[in-house]
Length: 219
Image (cartoon, rainbow, N blue to C red; front, side, top):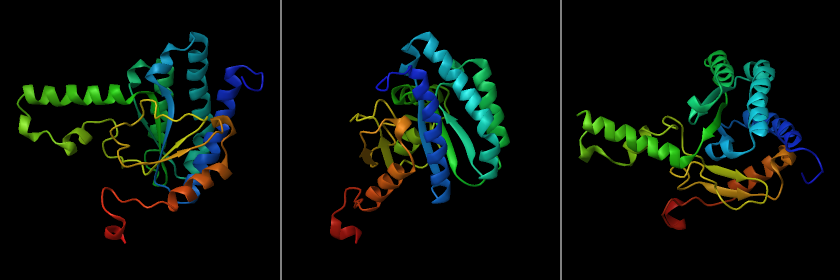
């Protein structure tokens, strides 16, 4: 919009940013990279834009599979996947199946995802297990909640990068971000490239992560 173009052009250019960031993440040995691709709130956008985004997910996945395989990238998805169109789910499942044995970067797409939805769903799962007798009330602790989230088995993020000059986490991984370092940039995602990604990583490396301890305790 800032450049006088339709929003869809921004989404298309954003896939270039995805490719560049994924390449760098794999090269420098990052094990997990989660991209907030489409939130549950995004379903409220104009239907034409939603349809275009769903098509873009499919065409991008089909185009990138050869490179994902070559670079050993394994694809995963978190979110309310059942809300996605069937053709989008089929493409996701196909790509996840083809990359399932890759051992490099784990690329996680958050699609139709919101943290409140995820936590609410976890509460339902735990409650159902208690009612069914599989769990007791005393079994509920942080580990149990973590195990019932969409991200079960995925480490909590060490760094969150927020683009576009926004200073909020927008309902993203609220449980998992408890001790995550935050990095904000004025750049819009379609303009985000390797240089800014490296800057974010360097900024993270210069920080002292104490997890409630004093600086002296972690030295």
